[in-house]
Image (cartoon, rainbow, N blue to C red; front, side):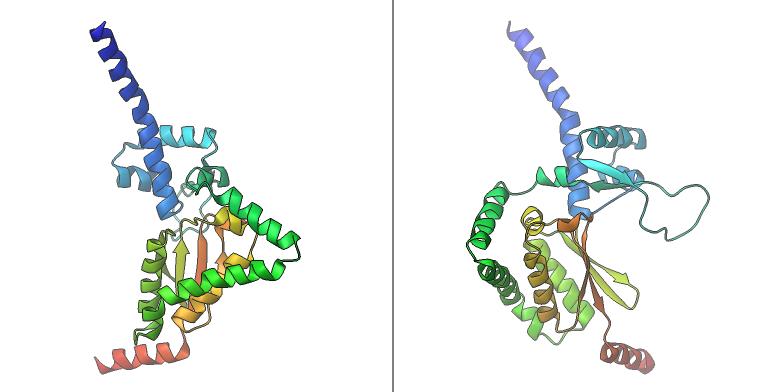
Length: 239
């Protein structure tokens, strides 16, 4: 009997391995944003065949969806690889369990002629972020350096943020949003957060996409200021 129990336990462990791997894949996309099967296979050291099997399972479960890439950096032969993106249903598996309660509370406030209270709550959250980013705001660093520091702060707050170059400026990408479910009902939260970014960075910013509105990633564009371009040219000329 002991031997049979041991065999059953071994079977359970083996049976759960695919679940662990799928969870790793889903969490990787959640924290780092949309990715191709090739990129995921390399990052997680899984064979291409293995990664595609798990991706198919995650798609059938409604956790992921496959999309054509937003833009191809290079045009080569054949069709560009599909990009796998976290769905709203998949993201909800990682969200805080208090989301529904938060939405209900804010709806109640709003229904009681308390729309101004919802706005004040959104501003309060933004002011807290601004307070945490006070050292970034007061520093003499360049806009790019401040942007990178803000991304680190946002990651610490649970937003898994990164920075990237975009046109004549930079972009902050938030690959996860702990309050996406709430923000989808109350966009004031996103609007106030955008103002906080502008306050911390000391420059105009533009929100391009949000997870709350169905996009795969929250993206905010930070244009390079004229003064910053001039400083860069002066530094390059002095070399």
